[in-house]
Image 1: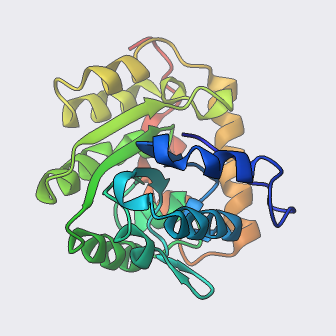
Image 2: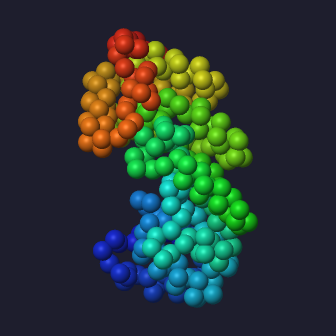
Length: 239
């Protein structure tokens, strides 16, 4: 099943009809935004549990694992009331690289939350990574962390905004990325071909603007020195 909650409405007019179907639901997928901070979906899960059918339902969701609660609601209390829980962890970078890409996140807290989820017997996790101009640079670290935790690592390529497509990286950077990811067909195809230098320049301007706007202690060129023009020297030949 799939149900989209409104942030403004306390209840959805279709909710009661969906609850009538609870005896016939085997899998329920929660989508966001970030599902674990959406109050209305907790209300719906309460109703499913009250119906007595949650123990027969497999729950599926994506989460960035930055939190396991929203107000009085703790998601672990809900997971234990369902049959199986399948989680796609949205992890685009490790350590400071992850915190930079997902601003306001704290890697230490994500690791702590993931370790907590690993203690719940009916929870199964894998990683889904969005390959963007930034995340592709150190994707090998995501794969390494996934292997250490016995997580399958899936990925998809960011096509929009066009400026963030991995193929727009300078050739020298793409060569470096390719050397660190031999045999990774999805990644290699993502960086293959001629990028758009203007798109790359716009992406860099955007990231520099975000650095100033967020006033972070982390800055683009400290974490990604290969994006500085002194490293790639403007090479834009086809890779």
